[in-house]
Each structure stands twice: as C-alpha cells, then as structure tokens.
Image (cartoon, rainbow, N blue to C red; front, side, top):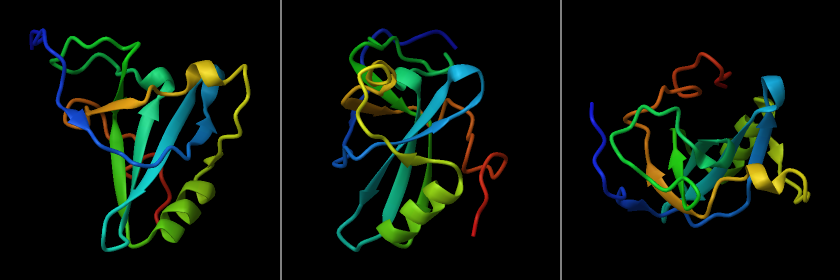
Length: 127
C-alpha cells in the first residue's frame, strides 16, 4: 500500500483527561475517554507521541497529528474509567519528563490500519 500524500480527516475527541500505562522497555500506551450525548463512553487508545506502527496509507506530520490505534465502547464513563484502571491505566499527572511522550492534540482515526491491541482481548481483561 503506497502512502497518500495528504493529511487524514480530523477526528474529534473532546476529553483531554489522559490516562497512561507503562509497558515494556519504557514505552507507554495512552487513552482518552469520550462520551456521547446518551452517556455512552468510548476509550480511545494511542501509542507514545501519537505515532503509528507505520501501517497506514497517509503521510502525516507526526509532530502535529496523533493516531487513534484502537478503541473500546462502554455503557458509561464510570465503567470505562473502571476498565482502564483495572487494565493498568492510571490518570496521567503532568510531569515534565513524560509530557514529551503524550499524544498531540489533533487526532485522526488509524484503527483500520493498526492492530487492535486492546479490543481484540489479547491485552485486555473484559468485565
């Protein structure tokens, strides 16, 4: 698949309350919980700095855009938060050293191109 040399369509996520999980070799996974008008929640997942694993057709400026690499739907914000905490994610408390790993504030949907790291159930305990 050769890259499309344009930016992907933007994806709106209102929340900026970051969760993070330290994984092996100093890497982190990141998550945001966003709710719809009916109170249902979606946890969106990101790699460090919002980068992809290179499996997408877009040539993006990774210093500006963050790729959503997976998501899981929940009945409520409370259940999403509980599931994140139960799977090793915690609220990110701003710290100068780790802020450089945070995903950027513009998002695009890369779920079609990236492996479903959590929603597949391989690295996620469902309740």
